[in-house]
Image 1 (cartoon, rainbow over the protein chains, first blue to last red):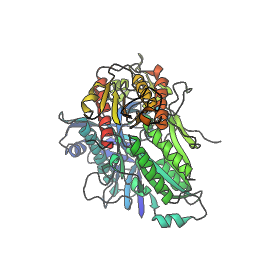
Image 2: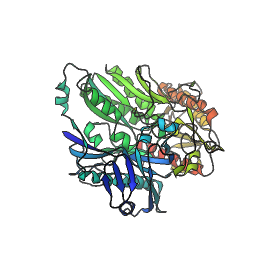
Image 3: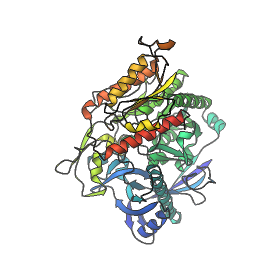
Image 4: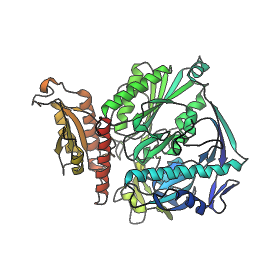
Length: 427
Length: 137
């Protein structure tokens, strides 16, 4: 299996017609985009806006962030739009690097987060360094919250794929070629190096708490093996707005930092032999079933070590811990990634579940720590929603226009794949 | 054995299957719901779903629903009702949840009237998801 990512660098977005890419500027045609999005009759109206890095702009509330990707000979986000889906991870995929489609607007009113393009919040997440084409959707009145989530999710993916098709004409791109063998080839590739498997947890709990794998709600799958290449092609997309700080957006799936880092060290420090996708469910029976099936697959891949990334906090922490425990009991050295909820002062118990075997934990920070954010010149969305969303309170908006929020309220502020701008560095 | 739902969300009751028992705790705090569940665990009940499943962080919503499997004849002697021992994993989880509630006790939000119906709605949606996982449609 071989996938070539052709990355076209985008450093600016402007509105204009016709839609095209000029140098590193994406020129987006509002009328054409509007026509495309309104093909879905469940959408009453749509508008677009632009947020650029360094500008005094705040986007709130953010539902999803998607990197535009498209394939000249197939589809990205396979399983989303067509019944006859292709397996992701083969051929050529064009990516608009540095640019994202960002969907905004409240759905059930509370879980989405904020992105600041400058100021202290911009130092936390990678989104502040990207050019955002924001899409604000208004649904038809008869659409219920379930369908509303679907409408927004599909519209975001559709626009992202459509914009990336503009890159097919661009000749100036950075090429990255990734290959992936079958289980036997991978196992035998580096006999002297320890074998490492990545356990990829994904939120699977219900409305606004779901992920989609080849278009299928991840609640109705059992743990399954993946290739890194299909993840790059959007086989897994976000359908959730779980606490924004720890949220895995579709962008985070497409650019999963755990996978990127594992590939970087593959063949040098260890042999990266596979990924097991583990849905994070609600009942204890499902948790124990998924633990058994996940650990079995990691063992079948012949792993000496495992890395587990997390999504969400609280209930999923139990999945994280019991899988870690079982892997360790099977002699597979395991590292887990999680954030902490240690209270505003950092003095409280920081994890809602733990096991003695979880002896190698990478933290992405204390989500309860608060930040005072300056007023921004422009808000895309509704500033007052900060009073309702995660990380904000009714007292968030200060009389002088500043905002007091927990890091938890910043989209990707402590992303649980480690894709943040904050971290400890050995010097 | 019987399944018992304890909830302070008044909208949950209509979703509870007839074969389950339901304890309404409308007006009580999430911590009080967890404490009631903890007491039942000491009497031999076990958790069927993680109480924090799909729930926002403790200070993000006032609603809490716990799904328990209880021995049919609860006894007052700790952990030995009808021959059922104390389910330690359930006790550990519920104690963690109670600790989380306490941690957030000083970080409470004021819930405005516009938000509460949304929070009740999502709580019902996630409860429906739990029922589906338990094989009840």
